[in-house]
Length: 317
View 1 (cartoon, rainbow, N blue to C red):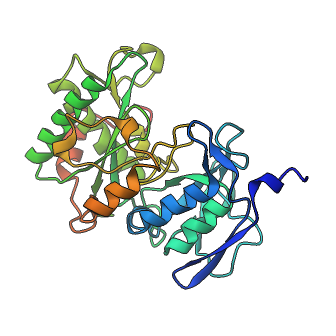
View 2: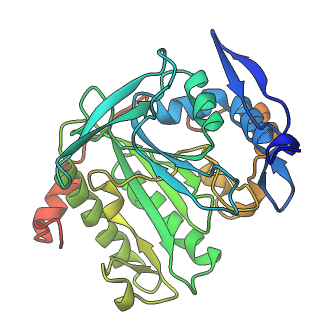
View 3: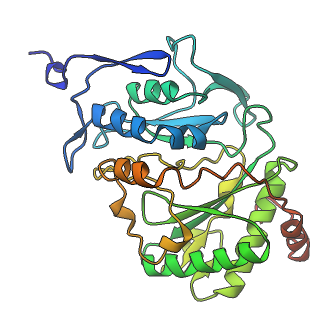
């Protein structure tokens, strides 16, 4: 018997107008419940509208696990040779290396399923789109728990974020990280570069810290942070910093998902409840809780005024 024989015979799926061949469909990707590559494919098919909305037109880094999540992860920026001719990409320049990469740019569900065929578990898109990759249209608020921070503290900080966004008349769209934290995404007008969006994000984070000093830190160096605090990670808005998208599966044995949630769910949500096994039914019942995220793009002028007030200038501040 060949090493891959137990992984099953390939299957061909029709996804929209495309045919996508799935090899090794029975290979176990998630050991905790024995979920397979085909289970992963079927999950992404079940949340198709949501994952395409989250990734649409964005350069995307792929986190691939060729042998399942118990084995080595591959960070893939470049779409490999041999990709189908219908697959959309966009060329991104990386000044640090003086090189370019053709990154996946999702425009249809078939491109997501193709990426899963290529062993992608996690999708990490840019917060800008290929039409103008240097101008972010998404501000990301990352509530990142320090090692001794419990989820009750994440909940408290999320309510402070919600209150502050309401005062600014800005609508944020929360989601679980798929781990121990929460993310809140805000659509913004693509009128500023990465450095200015990061300045605005830091100014907002510092205001959250002022309102909840016992729960929040914005201290950059990890060794200097309170180990029980929530770090509001403004640096996720730096160029080429990417985060798992809404509906992205995470590369852990439980197959957790970065799940959109309603603000009203914050006090009751348990992040581990959202997995590839539970999300299809939730999506079928509730639809995409981020379906209105593109309806309004906000301005960040007030946040930049706060940044001026706080003398936030340097990318390393």
